[in-house]
Amino acid sequence: MNPYQAAQHYSSVKVQSSVVDASPHRLIQMLFEGALERIAQAKGAMLQHQIARKGELIGKAVNIVAGLQGSLDDKAGGDIAINLDSLYDYIIRRLSQANYENDPAILDECGRLLGEIKMAWDGIAEEVS
Image 1 (cartoon, rainbow, N blue to C red):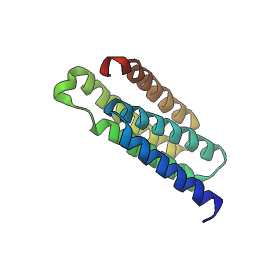
Image 2: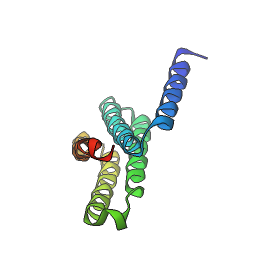
Image 3: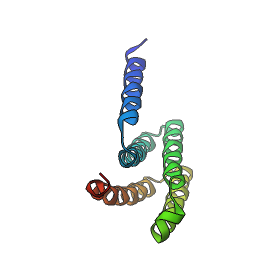
């Protein structure tokens, strides 16, 4: 196993053990963190003209945001869930547009939007404990 593969394996094991021990609230935080990280990595790949890597990372970010969207409970969440659903849909469309247009500013916008939602989610940590 080369050093890169070893690091990837360690990272995978670390994430798996974190997921097993995480509360539902923490799992959502981890999804936000993952999406934000992938967006930042995609921007780096975009700026370095690594087209395939950029597409792969944006695809991963889209999948994470879709997972967040799929976790919404319309009945229990009411208007908040409906608004978040629309916002997640917008972010997914913008991520796809950023990929197509190779536009880092759109990635920045998506990162800001997700960052704001994450800050609000982080703010309710004590209430859900």
